[in-house]
Image (cartoon, rainbow, N blue to C red; front, side):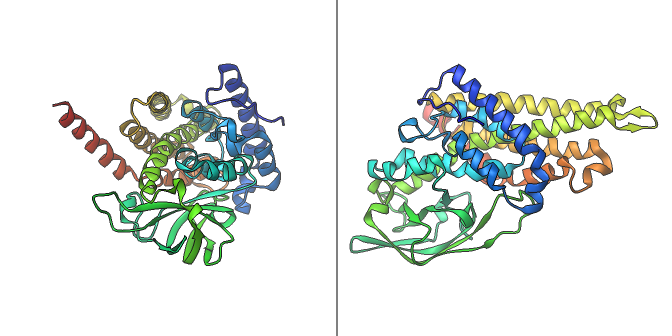
Length: 394
């Protein structure tokens, strides 16, 4: 496996095609045949992790100046649709490095913070984890209760985070904490860079989840964790809320693309089964009601792919970085749930059996409607944004 071709912020079409071709081969010839091994062992094998590092997948969305491939979001979603074709645990392994954790540093870090961390994040030497969600604050960061109190030149962080992706293997936590109550000056939410070996930081046991075996999450506790002033991202106490909102919005487009990849896989499994499984000596794909289910799946996949590409183009062009990401995330994550459900239906009783790909997909995609903001939150963002636009227009 060769290293993926590096590019600048605007990778040309030929280089992108090579990146996508290499990724597709890796996903379909290396990872896909070992999906059951990953599920049974609840872990990504070391050789697959090493290959992903060699290919540059830990830094595909990190700018080239820091050692990444430099894909913009329009290119990112094309890669995400390829990565989404297999177990979601693969993308989870390096997703936060490129997405919600890494992009906080790319967009809001100081030059010193960027040069210190981003090259190691891009290479996979450092696994970054995005520590936002809490027992009482998830899709809406304004409810954060984790606190950061200034003590001389240091900050002392106390609180608890929940469902934190890659926490058991993280080297760096990007931690959101409240420095004061929200006021006219801002929401009072800051973001800090906290190395995993900092005294007082404790990672809980791996969560036992409905699906996504091999993608680890856990609680993270901060018991008077002391970090220096240089750990404050951007050197700005009020950067946290903006960083969270920007990173989450970008991540929503990526999750939408990932959903399209999973939906395509569920569709392909359904078509293959319908073409070969028989009922009364006739392939079930000859039955019109089965064909209708395949048609609904195909329509959902095509609509989702078009919406993702449109939302990503609007993001890159700066045209819409709020409503379009939420619309794409809402539609595509709901769509993949329906496509996965139909895939089980097409398979009949076989689709309900463990070790059958569509059964795993059915469980795995359920969480896509929850993280990076629930479907309900996306509806609020879209509706509120439309009303705001109308008022501004009038």
